[in-house]
Image 1 (tube, rainbow, N blue to C red):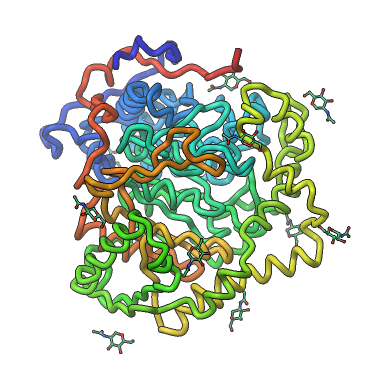
Image 2: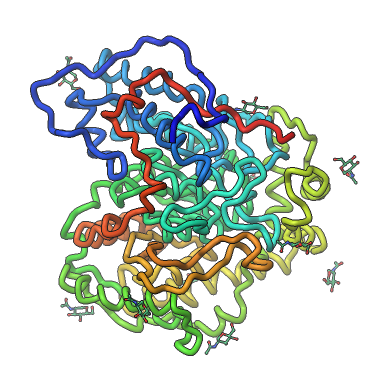
Amino acid sequence: MALHALTFLTTCITAVTVVTATSSTQFPFQPLPDLFSLTVDDIITGFSTNQFTSADLVSAYIARAAEVQLALRPIIEINPDALLIAQTLDNERLIQNRTRGPLHGVPVLLKDNIGTADQLNTTAGSYALYGSIVPHDSTVAANLRAAGAVILGKAGLSEWAFWRGTNNSNGWSARGGQVKGAYYDNQDPSGSSGGSAVAAGLGLTALAVGTDTGGSVIDPANINGVVGIRPSTGLTSRAVVVPITVVQDSVGPITRTVKDAAYLLSAMAGPRGDPGDNYTNAIPFTTIPDYASYCIASGLQGAKIGIPRNIFPAPINYTESDIQQIDAFNAILPLLASLGGNITDNADYPEIDAYNTEAQFTLALDIGFKHDFPAYMSQLKFNPTGVEDLADLLNWTQQFRAEQYPLRSTDFWEDSLASNLTTESPDYLAAIAHNAYLGSNATIQGALDAYGLDALVLPTAYSVRPAVFAGYPVITVPLGYFNATTAVVQAGGGGDPTVWGLNTVAPGIPFGLSFIGPRFGEAQIIQFAYAFEQATMVRYQNLPLAKYMPVTQLHTPVAQAEFECPDALGLPK
Ligand SMILES: *[C@@H]1O[C@H](CO)[C@@H](O)[C@H](O)[C@H]1NC(C)=O
Ligand SMILES: *[C@@H]1O[C@H](CO)[C@@H](O)[C@H](O)[C@H]1NC(C)=O
Ligand SMILES: *[C@@H]1O[C@H](CO)[C@@H](O)[C@H](O)[C@H]1NC(C)=O
Ligand SMILES: *[C@@H]1O[C@H](CO)[C@@H](O)[C@H](O)[C@H]1NC(C)=O
Ligand SMILES: *[C@@H]1O[C@H](CO)[C@@H](O)[C@H](O)[C@H]1NC(C)=O
Ligand SMILES: *[C@@H]1O[C@H](CO)[C@@H](O)[C@H](O)[C@H]1NC(C)=O
Ligand SMILES: *[C@@H]1O[C@H](CO)[C@@H](O)[C@H](O)[C@H]1NC(C)=O
Ligand SMILES: *[C@@H]1O[C@H](CO)[C@@H](O)[C@H](O)[C@H]1NC(C)=O
Ligand SMILES: *[C@@H]1O[C@H](CO)[C@@H](O)[C@H](O)[C@H]1NC(C)=O
Ligand SMILES: *[C@@H]1O[C@H](CO)[C@@H](O)[C@H](O)[C@H]1NC(C)=O
């Protein structure tokens, strides 16, 4: 697809001092690495041997994004300053001989709900936040900038991280349009961090960041062929991130490889001394672990891993999708054992019936958003719509045509407003405490303790809940693909699943394997996932559809050509 065919492109960025990579006698890359599989380690090597620069990467990524943007819409905005920032970081490295760390000059795409105090908007996909100005960078963005990352832009998402109404489609937002996956036509990208997962998967960025309240990192990573980590609640700060609820929100990496996710997590985790950020200030680390150092090929040696099979669906309820994922899972257990894993099968969740019948998933979202959303709005430096609380947001959204109400409902907010509970209500606090018990001692912690385990392993599809209720960490890594005769299943939010024409199960769509660890046990699950990934490299066994595979590479002229970047999507007509 030709760049100039894209109407949303406009020339941006003016002259800056450009340091080009100088020739070196030692070129480890011949040819230059493919951007579909480029890793942070490749970038470190390419930079240190002067084979390419951060500016080269930014230019190539923007050109790649432009190739697929109209078809798949993974990106909402490109940072107009990305090239300038990359060049500044190149200068720092090449002229000042200063490297901040492994992420120096590495482009990172943020989900559109992660606040940045720059030319980018932070909108959670909604026009209600368009043009709003955040008080300062989110802690996550500030940590990444300090680590030398280049904020490349904002990724498409399910609007409000899917916290708006039952019958929205995964990946749709008023500002970004419909994100789609690349492995099948009209692939449901899952969500809510669908744009981050599609962009990481296609190599439109080196690294991507998502947020997770009830599966929003793990689910899209699962079906877009990438790695995702939902960190322990609190490890990554929610400061200046558009919230759903402080009880469950977590910000996590979405990347092509486990080691890239590990580098990214170390860079973005932890507080920045913000006194209001109580959860992140309370994490049990004075220094965030160097998670990449746990990426060792022998990482499963002696690992005690259990399979909580009683969270899988009952066989009588298996769909074809369940059968294929469970078959693929069972088939790799001998490999896990041969890599040194000591596997306890049927390391079941001890109080599964209580969990299944008593856990209240929407409660913390219903009550938390009503409280945390106005708190987010009140800190804005500029609020162009005047929306201050959930009642305002409901009214505003229902009246603003591009928000597509009532086709896309607002029932989650209506239910929330109809509830007389607040975050202070004893009934609410008791129910949240019970949820935390159901997600820990009744299930994950209960199984870890009862069987003396380091971690749990299971098909990703069954791994998200109960982990989110008590803030346990989950990592997903590619395991397999739906086979050639798979019957296509449509989905996309609730409502009538055929309305949006999105395919959620179909031939060639990937699925993953998850490890769940104890609270703040990210290092070990990263170690286990890395050993599995290195032994299998499933991500490269089946590729996205050829028509969605960008062709721009570091060596192609377009990556070096006069720089263009996507314009703002702007207000609808
Ligand atoms: C750059 O810094 C590294 C260590 O930080 C040092 O070993 C090297 O000699 C420096 N190179 C130049 C050209 O100053
Ligand atoms: C952010 O929103 C403003 C409108 O308030 C718009 O003018 C600007 O172009 C947007 N920024 C980007 C990078 O799209
Ligand atoms: C954080 O903790 C302090 C001290 O306990 C408290 O005063 C403050 O209200 C808390 N902040 C939030 C956002 O919960
Ligand atoms: C099968 O699914 C139905 C509908 O979701 C559910 O009511 C039933 O309990 C499930 N059966 C078993 C054995 O889990
Ligand atoms: C795909 O998986 C289904 C369910 O396990 C199986 O019935 C079918 O034979 C498989 N098709 C191929 C081509 O392997
Ligand atoms: C696996 O773990 C169990 C329980 O801790 C232990 O008894 C057994 O010896 C271990 N097996 C191997 C092969 O290490
Ligand atoms: C609802 O929004 C409309 C326009 O956005 C505004 O005119 C009206 O006053 C609002 N109503 C309430 C009850 O806030
Ligand atoms: C979504 O729900 C609303 C209200 O119930 C309804 O009017 C609309 O038709 C639904 N849309 C879809 C796509 O199901
Ligand atoms: C809150 O609403 C419930 C029903 O949803 C009702 O039973 C209860 O009395 C109400 N409590 C208060 C304090 O209004
Ligand atoms: C889980 O059990 C431990 C040890 O028995 C206890 O300290 C902790 O409070 C329990 N957690 C919950 C959420 O009930």
